[in-house]
Every structure is written in C-alpha cells, then in structure tokens.
Length: 280
Image 1 (tube, rainbow, N blue to C red):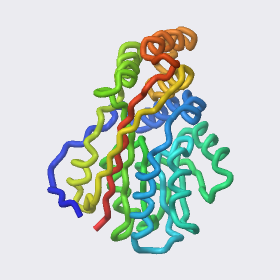
Image 2 (cartoon, helix red, strand yellow):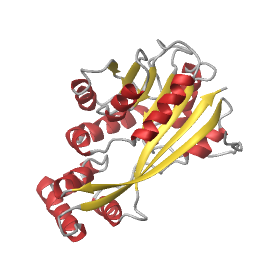
Image 3 (tube, helix red, strand yellow):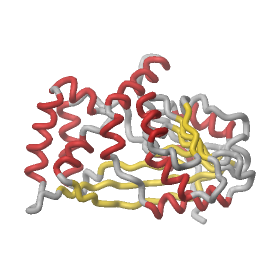
Image 4 (cartoon, rainbow, N blue to C red):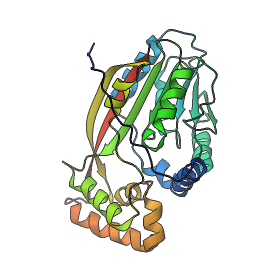
C-alpha cells in the first residue's frame, strides 16, 4: 500500500455566475457535442477499469448498494465498469445533459444500468447508500467541495470514491498539442483549470487515497476520427459558433494533413489516470 501525506490544497473549480447558469452551461456544452462524443471519444484502458472494479468488489457492504457514475455522459465508462464488476452489482449513471443521457440509455440496453438526471452536488442516493461513487473525465466541471461532501455523505465506511480521467498528451503527442492549440486559438477561454486530484483527495479528512493508476496510450486515428475527436471537446461549441461547422472542419483537416503519416494515420496521445480513495 502506498502512503500518502495529508496536504492543504485550494480547490480550483469552474468559474460561473450562479449555480443555475453553471448547470445550463454544462448541459448546453455537452448536448451540442453528444453525437460526436459517443462516436469519437476513446474507451478507457481495460486494465485500469478492471483494477477499479476489483477494488469496488472488495469493499464491504451489499452488492445491492449501487456504484454511481457521476457525469456519465453517453455511458462509455459506465458500460465498461458495469461489464467489469461481478454479476449482480448495480450501476447507476447520473447525467444532467438530456441528449447525453438518452444516448447512454440507447447504447446500454443489454446491461443492468439505470440512468437518471442529477448532479454531483446533489447525489440521488440516501446517506450511506452507495457502494462506490465514480466519475470519469467529468470532475473538473464539478463544484468539488460540494461533490466531496456529498460523496462522504453517500458512502459508508470503506466505500470507494474514484476519479478517472484522460487528458491530451500535449507534451509528447504533436497531434494532441495541435488540437489544444486550435481550441485555445479559435474557441472561448477555458472554463476550468486542470485539478490536482491526488492533492485534493489527500487533503480530505473523510477519505484515504489508496492508489493512483496511470497509463499513456497512442490512438491511431484516421482523418475523420481526428476531426471528430477534436470537435467532441466541450469547448468545441464555441469554435463552431465562431467559425461555423464547415470552416472548423476545413481548418482541422488542414492540421490533420500536416500530421498524418504516409498511410493517413494520425498518432494521437492520451494520458489516462485513476485516483482511488476509501472512506474512513
């Protein structure tokens, strides 16, 4: 077991004027890109998903107590986790954007997953009623002090809190760096700062950080995949409004042509991370 030192950390959350404005902005951003999100966003590394599922399965409590995936989007991670958990484990996906939630329901008919409206700051579960609370590439949008307080309320002793994410590997991947530059140049200012989840979890008195998993992957994309992945970003809505869809696609195709190798493949780098904590 890895030992972690308690630290004090200031949480960096999205800057919005009012809770309803923040929620409306979140829904609008992701409703606008739901189709591209489901089609082009990557799945998470299976080894990472299995490691988290094993940790959840080893936690005490009834298997009937659900694992809740907050900000589940179109259900990409929700489905992977549901398949990795033992039979009989309940999974609930919580997503405030209606179009994302409908896509998740449509694509999960073969799995025992329930999808519902809701937010990280008001979890749809009673006190101590969840076996695990997870979130995948969504927590940077949360009011995280409220989310952590809700997770503490909803989890019993040794219940699991996990934050999973992927970020563009802009340091080692020219394609990922080019997309970041394009979105920064053509889109609105970023609405959040990238959090230090390990430091935040270490600072919580109610939780013990148990593990940090990392894996870097390079995705071989064709031109359609490169353009679609770039425009699946939450910041793509502002780009499309400013440039128009045809001009945005044309600009990305030009970038992709410069990056593609001889057979038209574009190597796109992602860094995946999972931060796993237990409630005391």
